[in-house]
Image (tube, rainbow, N blue to C red; front, side, top):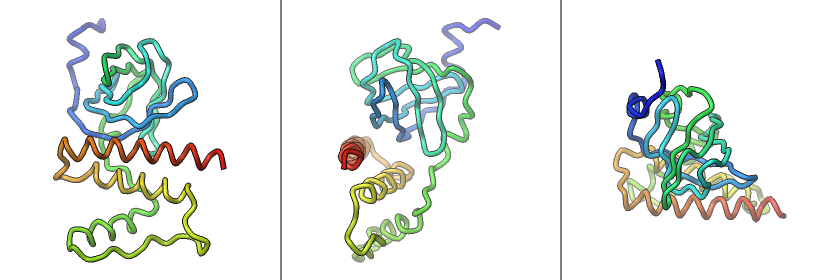
Length: 169
């Protein structure tokens, strides 16, 4: 079967997933707005059409190319098929229990217990890790809204900035 324009519409899942796009030696947080075995619609991409990229979500990675770009939206065509169901699973982190405890505390309006950090205080890398964990938890929330999503993208951008600062240190 030849791949045609109608192929693109088959098997697309509308999603709201956080991911990281690697392009030209840089990383940027993106939102995956729809996903199929062969490609995805990304929001927040700064990569131009034709750029070779890698999309990361938790331990998952897919290589591909930016097929088109318009404003803050871009279409990525994967080099091979991905397993969509795996990409749609909630990304669990090793410190998920700490994040869950904070979310539960926020929901119950109780003050959250502090995260376990080194005696010398938190490193930038630890702050970035905790921000990533919070972002993943909020992204997986059933009550996620567009407004909250926009703020979450900003929070992820701050985490990436802190990550770059920590890498220089």
